[in-house]
Length: 481
Image (cartoon, rainbow, N blue to C red; front, top):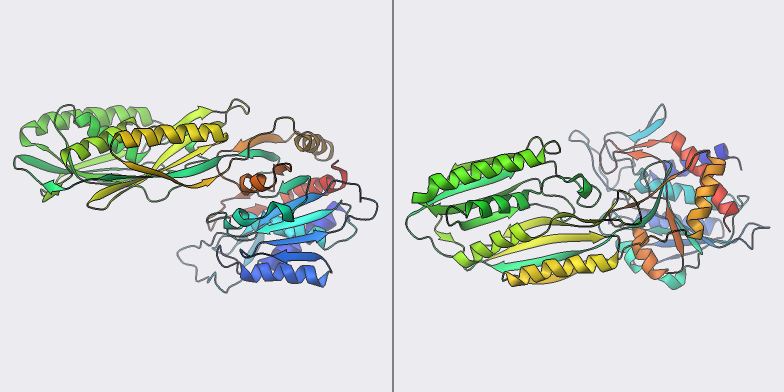
């Protein structure tokens, strides 16, 4: 099979799976399609309780001694559409539009993330003449909303020496590691008391910040609205005792919070000095945030006096914790230049009247550093009266410098594509981290064609890059040793 013929087959299978609704959580149809695909070709296949599918193909004659390889991608897609679209992701096929070198959908997400991996695997399985050793194709579910499929994959069901994950979205890029992470759930009782006389109330809101993904974009050092609001009120507390009646912000565990707001009070006689302090601190923070957050704003307005406030010790505990807690980049990688190794994000604060919940996400490329930063934050929290627990830990895919797979892949890429690939890691969780925990002796590599605007209705796939990646994949299947 020529590279061009294989690419044509890849695009054919991508169009086929685009006919099947496969929003995260609704993968039964595509999972059953894969099982039928295998049955029609006499291939061994299995489907588990999370609708993951493994399809196995024997080595092409003459390639029986090649090392076994796992091709892996996820079968679910993010379901987003424009405000004017009438698309129903539960039943409608994705309407594909090809314009020049790009493929996109009609006002919806395209699903190339990660349908292109599925299509590449099917194109290999559909042609028994493609040279490869023993092959296992692993199709996982629910990657976009929690990696639930990868979580239940059993290592004893797979036997690959190498795993090739086709879920990277930039041509010429190799991902060789990813961050592990966990969520810290912190709770502070607020013990509300009646508001004493002699206090003036204000509402304060921080907004206009960029936000962004708390892993991939943490190195850009965008402002964190919750940390900023905590800093503002802590600084104001130097000139006037601050009492909190309400404090909240953030909405997603994996997003840097763009907005936060609070209701606070101070003694009426100290209002002017408090306002001066806030104004000075706002100017300082605005200067610090240029140029990454040019639209940063703080709005402070008088408001009705609330009937209750947090107990004064709890107000102080919350402000001190938010002032002292780390946020953003904690350490840079010592193995991969310019890459964030460890970070955390103060993601969400929720006010439940009798208690405050704080959610913090922690990430690291090294599990020991993840544990270190987690323990520091939890220690700080407990010292300020919070109860603290860890939830949802997922493992890092730690970098194996000089692995046989990386060395061969880089050399083969230069040989067949003509350029050196960019070898890097991602400061976010990938399925490879979970799969590596089950397959500790399997070397892994992630790559893929160029996809822009993933997770949005502007998602588009660069078709020439599919040809490039197809050529490289066929070379890997034939020549990896």
